Image (tube, rainbow, N blue to C red; front, side, top):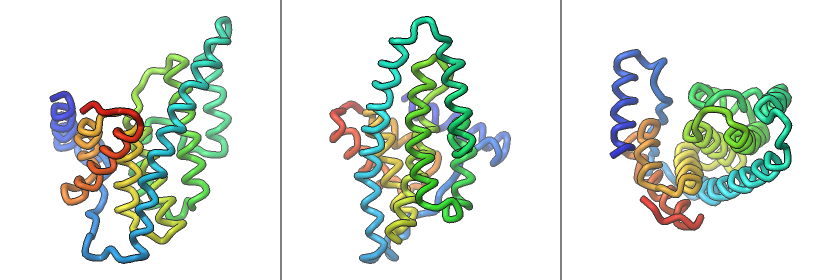
Length: 215
């Protein structure tokens, strides 16, 4: 019910204030155009799961480091680290909502290396921000990282980009939250209905194989 309320609330805000207040919308997966080369996008599914595991390990590492820094202003130190990384990878800043929209038009120009590096750095830094007391959530950063990873797979393999993005994002968000239904409902803000079965399947696989079984 919380997920449904969030989705309808966000859609209402988008209607009231225009597309600038909304969420990025991806194109449909064209299932009829999928061929052998396009199916290389399936590699995005295990990549999304692996990135969720990386984020979990980064969270444990951040907690371990912060526990040893009782007298250090952790939030300030986190800001310094964030700023230094942003000098090389500016998309690690902010929630990722506007960054995800930028990826729609600029993912090919960024290149696979930058996309993957940004994805890994943003996942780790999000955990560090959470651990050091910065206010915010993880859904938008996770979505951004899933999209970046999917586009990276499409560049490297030549697979279908929309299929890759749906698989990597669904797997990453589902595995990170452990709630495939909630993940699918929230991601419905970005993915069209025709792509949601792929998103839901990836979210289920991510949640189940990551030791989570909750809806």
